[in-house]
View 1 (cartoon, rainbow, N blue to C red):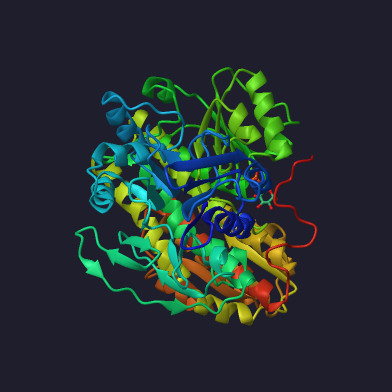
View 2 (tube, rainbow, N blue to C red; view 1 turned 30 degrees about the horizontal axis):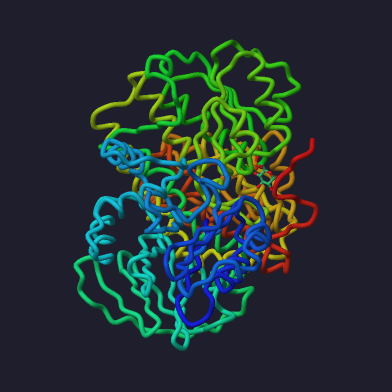
Length: 608
Ligand code: G6P
């Protein structure tokens, strides 16, 4: 997501920080800023847009004198991209400056508390609460103040902090978001990503969760939140810049797949409070929501596939009729939209031309529009009535993975909320579903850690001419996405089939050695898919099954089996898609394809 760079040493800090921020540009950002202590106070410079605006504004940093400072490139999550929302954020007297990467989940509650105590907020960000909270607890001892603040903050974050009355120290702390310390000769760096500092040093200390770094020109110290000192190992990184940008992974796509546990957690956990789903962005009363007669979902590409899965979940759980359309079809098919129908548009970029057109058409018809979007301030986010952000951070690989997973997570929350207000979900059933929901991030991690097995399977199918995916119900929706991933990046023709349709066409294409990926996660449909597996096997297919644990019959019939951890059947999209993403990835890598930038495809399709 956002980029952090900090410096303390003998050099002028601002040019070093700008240089570091420039090296983080590849991550995507919408605004940037710096805070530098100039010998008497903290000087702040911020600007929206490209880094060269900040560069020109500060004459390459020359205009900000001083030897300690923090900088930030922002990728908006809370509040539009503009100068006020750009980091650093400061307390009222301008003596404490903070930059943050992450999400402060309880920022609204903290903001209210601080407002009641007379604090005034200038931005819409979650980060500004941290500057005021530090101010509120400040007792002249920055370390103790930071520890106190952390005790009140929920979420995942990495922070760089400077205090004007302790300008000889640069502070850093993290929880779940990365923060590293670069070790130079009588100088120290802080960064969200090693790329930012490789030019200056290859000696790095990796901060762990809830460890506090204190960097002085003369040395560095680390402590825990109990103020126990810790010794940290300095390691030498031998990555080149290109590897460092990808977090050491070979491709952005792999890096982004590996980020999925975090983005799913970040989408879910701020919206689950005290055992209830709270979607503050959806400003409709429970009664209004309960009265929604029909839901339409319109989206393109992978976002459409999350909609297909959502239809099954919404109808099953909340008993509300859902129509799901490709946005390019929806806009021309003259759908029977009624005033007050709820139209959900789903988009990573928020700029997809057909999805925007679908939104505008539905708005014109008097529908209420809920957008599930990743990019804050995008066209879809601006034009929708309600926006649920997915907070997956910038996605660089053209083929989406982490944004898809975050969209799915947002849709689970919506389905459960809807089921609750319509009285289909409560008590133990709700609790059990919430438990399963919260287990998803670690289960996704488990599956990602199993990637060597998928790599081994993938290596056998690098020369495949075509691949079929089959499943029923939600499993069919999963197949649509699995098939798209494979064809997008490996250029192998693939098709997803509702398994019941096999006999109406596809089966004639099965030959000796054809790979068929069979997804079976829905207990009520196991016998059906088992018959389909037998049918394709009888015609020579090689079957890779993605299924739940203990499904002996299906395991026996399949050539390869990937088992998924236990969950609620309605949540299996999030688990089954992981091996399918990896299958596509490793087959494409094996074929020497440009995985991150597949031919002819664009990340954001802004024309019809
Ligand atoms: C392109 C991308 C896909 C994406 C689709 C919809 O085809 O390659 O990954 O799913 O557009 O984009 P959106 O930004 O609206 O989610």
